[in-house]
Every structure is written in structure tokens, then in C-alpha cells.
Length: 164
Image 1 (cartoon, rainbow, N blue to C red):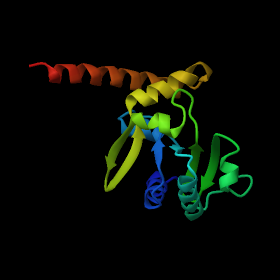
Image 2: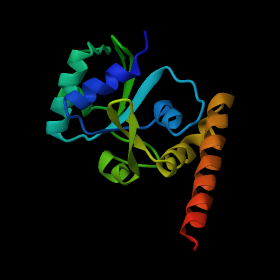
Image 3: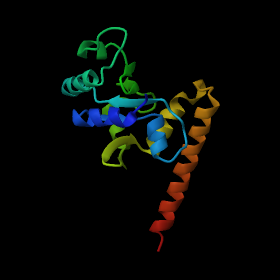
Image 4: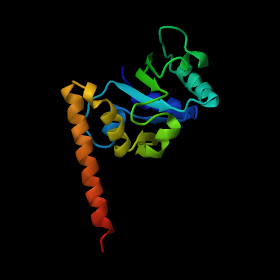
């Protein structure tokens, strides 16, 4: 059964440096997007990869071959099955780059007793714009329009707040 809360709690417990980048981030911004996995962009340093590997081990994450630090260096994305559901881990995201490039778009979302590092609306838009030409799923296209409209609405609201 899909339990994103457990996945995020385990990542936090192991002090993994990551940003939630997909449907969960979109949902936490208020978009009614349905998702069945957790997508994260992780910091690809050796120390962080070791913490990530410990978290993946605790989640009983499975891939085609055993997941090691060396394997994590071989490609940018891995779709893993864990005992809590699917987890996609990225070391690079089109439109954002690597973790160090994307961290400027990180926000902390409070959910119950958890802090969840998520992409800001601006970061979500940048990542979606980089691949939107390839997207054919009407649900995902609708979510993209929703976050763009929400971003514009929030910008207008901030401007009005600043005016005396």
C-alpha cells in the first residue's frame, strides 16, 4: 500500500538531503493531482548517498540489481519499489539541474509533525516547462496549468500585500 508519509519520515530520519519534486510536491501546494509515487531530487555527495542508501535499505527498496553508491553514479533516475510504495530518485532534473542548483527552489512544507522539503511553485514550473513538450497525459497537463495559475495568483497577492 502506498504510504508516502513513511517514505518521507525514513528519509528525514536518516538526514538525507533531498527535495520532493513531483506529484506530492504539487499536491502539497494545493493541486488536486493524484499520484502513486514519491519523486525526490537528492544531493549526490558521497555522505548523502550513504545516508540515502541506509534509508533505502530500511524501506527495503528494490531495483534490477542491488543499489550501491556506484550504481547511483551510473544514471540520473531510478524507479524503486519499496515496502511503502514507489520511490523515484533523481540526481539531476531537467530545468533545475543538480541538487545544488535546485536548492534555491526548496521550501519546507509542514505536514502533521513532519517538515517536507518540496519544490516551490517556481521550481515546479521550471522543471515541468523543460519536459512539457514530451507530456501527453491530460491529467499532468492539467496539473501544470493549475500550478502556473496558482503561481501567478500568489505573485499578485504578494504585490497587493506589499502596497500600503
